[in-house]
Structures are given as structure tokens and as C-alpha cells.
Image (cartoon, rainbow, N blue to C red):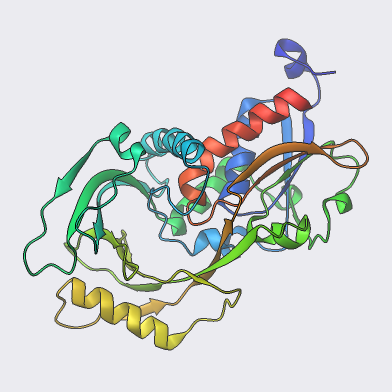
Amino acid sequence: MRLQGDNRRMSEALPVAIVGAGVVGLTTAVVLIEHGGYAPVIFSSNRTSNTTSSVGAAVWFPYDAEPEPLVAAWGLLSYGRFAELARVPDTGVSMIDFEYRSAHDDVHVPEWAESIGYRRLQPSKDSPYLSAFQVRVPLMDTTRYLRYLEKRTKLTDELFRCVSLNALTEIPADFPVVVNCSGYGARALVVDDEMIAHRGQVAVVEKLAHVPAFALDKPLTYVIPRENDCVFGGVNETSEDIAPNHELTREIVARCSKMLNLQRSPSVLAEPVGIRPARKAGVRLQAERLGDGRLVVHNYGHGGCGVSLSWGCAQKVLQLVETFR
């Protein structure tokens, strides 16, 4: 029986197991905690600082995920939350002007850009791209934003269980609700052959002053200036290899430096690699039951825009838990 209103506040909070300590799992934990009536515990083999979420440039830009109408809706809800956080000190969230550049002469402008406002740009004759548009979007500096989420969830050692799960049924039975935010790990955890490993590698370089934030579609190239450094990218290839490719790093730095017309290549501080959890059938955000009747809500397959969709998808998780628990 579901408990609502005052009855819920008077009752003991419902234990919820969240599988995955990345931005999707942490954000889901925040939404459940702050809604009230739920006590999430995170199950993960890695701390947040060692997840794919810590690698990304994390500029808000829904892409590489389906279905497009739902992705746009989840993304726009997340946009609103990030815009609010950008006004709060020490969250690691800021608003930036971001250019999406295309090697084609008619850049595709997604429908969500109509909602937040955009303007087309006119490239110069010697530009390495033919068309572009600019939007003002949130930027999440993951070196700070993920720590902010951990603080907001009050993620103590008691609320984090460092385990490697082979199946969701291994979660103790005293968790009547399980939320699967395992990212690419879902391929093995729930035997989802729809999952595809989209390998990403970036170069974190020294701080650069007065450089634009942009992404070029072909070859995939992006520059994201942050408070203390700058992220150069990138690559999106099908591979599970998480070892840094130093030659690829040199190529990324050379390509970005050329597009910025830098007189010298900046110093490389780090070469992070992560696996974007792409899914051929699109984001999996649905509820089902384990064999023992416990509720499972799946929340994975976000491709390269887990951060961009995180708040919208977490809100949908809450809705599903409220409906089916």
C-alpha cells in the first residue's frame, strides 16, 4: 500500500537501492531524498570520481540519444534545473555561449533550440566550417559539480556500498525498490545487448583565456573552457578500451589548437577516457519487477548526454516509483 501526504512523513523512509554512482545515479538520489519518503543507498564498484561522468566536458547539449521527443523533454527540464544552479555559488554550474558548427552548409538546428533561443552564425570565408548556430547553455564543471551532488545527497560511507554486482537480484531483499543507473554496465548486469560502447577521449589542457566554447560535427572537435582548465575533444568510436591513446591526444590537441589559431599547443594536464553508454533502442527508462516482486526502474542508455538529461530522467524515475511501488 502506498503512503501519501502526512502518512508518508510519519512513516519510516523506504529503502531504495541505486545502482551506479555517476551523475545519473547521484541526481536520482537527490530527487528521491528531497521529495521525501525515500532513503537511497548507492551500490557501485566505483566512486563517482572514477565514473564516466567525471570525464565528460559536460556542456548541456542533448545528442546521441533517442527517442528524440522524450530526450528533448527530459533535456529541457534539466536545462531549467541547471539554470537555477548556475545562480548558486559553489555548484560548478555556469551559463556559457556555445557554438555548434557544421562541415555542411545547412546546420541542423534541433527543436529544443527553439525553446531556449538560438541565433545562426555566419562563418567567414576561411572558417573550417560552413554553417553554425549559437545557444546559451549550462556548463557543468564535473570537477566541482559531482562533488556538489555528493554533498547534496549527503553520501556518507554508510550510504555507499562498494560492490561489483553480477545481477540485480544480488541486492539485499530489504531494498524493495531498485533503480538501475548502471550506464554501460547494464550490458552485462541486465544482459542488454542493445548497449553500445561509445569510447570518448579528451585532453584536459591548461587554462586558456578568451577562447570560444564550440563543437564541430566533422571531424568531431570541441573546445570547452572551464574555470581552471580547458577541455579539448574529441573522439566517439565503438570500443571498450579505456586506456589513453597518447597519439590520439596529440591529434586532438593539434586539431583544436589549429581551430583556435593558437601560436603554440597548450600543456596537457590529463587524458581522460570514458565509455558513453549508447543504446540502439534509445534510453531505457521504464519499470518492471524482479522475480521476487520487487520494483526495478531502469534509467540508462543516455549515450553522450547523461548530464544533459539527468534531472529530467530522475524526475521520471520518481514518477514511476510513485506509480508502481
